[in-house]
Length: 375
Image (cartoon, rainbow, N blue to C red; front, side, top):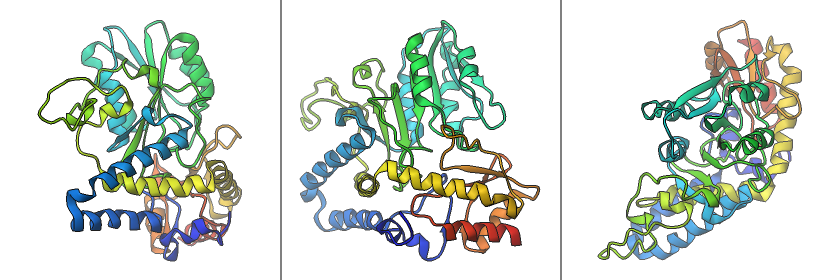
């Protein structure tokens, strides 16, 4: 996969920018942008007359999302963002006074505040600190006790780029009878995740990062045998088995994950997400991962020449598409100078954060390194 592939040609952002910030808000592929305008145009011209077409499209995208995770469509619900998916679990879980939840101290706020919001229900939050650039499974294990009901971690930590061993942590949870939630936003679309093989119980991810979709739409996944475990929140007319029987009230919830889709769907977002999913699945997530890791390895090798040192763990099972770089200079100023040079990167936790996707090239990395060296 190189600069001449269809993937790069699908990314108009390359005409102007060396875009290396997919851990923030990613650019849309050309076909995805077309999909959003296609829905708007159809709605303008046809209104409800196109209802059946778009209902079928929602079902099709649900199948694509299930394919991405190697799951079943009935385990997928569309959400407006990752936070909403986390809230489905945090608010719906059958907590008892004295229970505790374990998560990393460096988690993105979206994967901390919903659990902290359960303190009024007598739930203790146990925050596991990192050791430098890593979060050790031994420290997670040490935080667990007989009252731990759930462990919640990111697939990839947003600031450091540390990639958790989901299979090992999930296995630990299964051994202890503990549920495992994954905030997958910083890995899904860039790294393979097979929920048939990996012992995850719940997962949420917005589409606007590595999935190359728009903001305001994402994926919530729940293992099918756990659907009735959670008390469903955000219930609405579309949560029941017969949602279009408007004059007959029958509170019989759908037996599938889309019971959490209580109201009207974000059809434009779902259609656009489906277009991006189709693109990613066509190239193959395993191939995308290989290319991303090639690029980030190259970046790490070359970073010292620009006065940068690599903070992220780059061991084989811990590295990801996010590279955190330390600098003696002001990272905010470097981000600004890079943008002036046509390079988009970001800063987190006082370090530069660079996150290329599979369509990026060595030339994009060189533009970044030159911009930093000349700043």
